[in-house]
Length: 94
Image 1 (cartoon, rainbow, N blue to C red):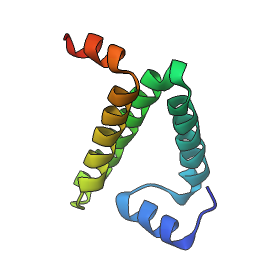
Image 2 (spheres, helix red, strand yellow):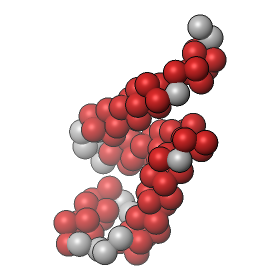
Image 3 (cartoon, rainbow, N blue to C red):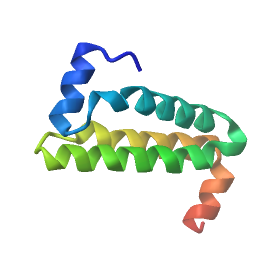
């Protein structure tokens, strides 16, 4: 949220204006908070997956590696599944 020089450089590299950094930071904090509350963690996992989908598309557009952006949603869903096993069984149809 603080427009560090490395963040400004990276945002410009993928085609975003540095002016959106505070908004991006706020959205990330909201997604993290929603993910941490057990009653809303499913919504948080969906939002985080969507956010990382946008990050993947930005990296593909400029031909950057995007392994981390693929790995993070996998970790989020594994964590959600371990924390809410009954919900995952319902989602996966077990």
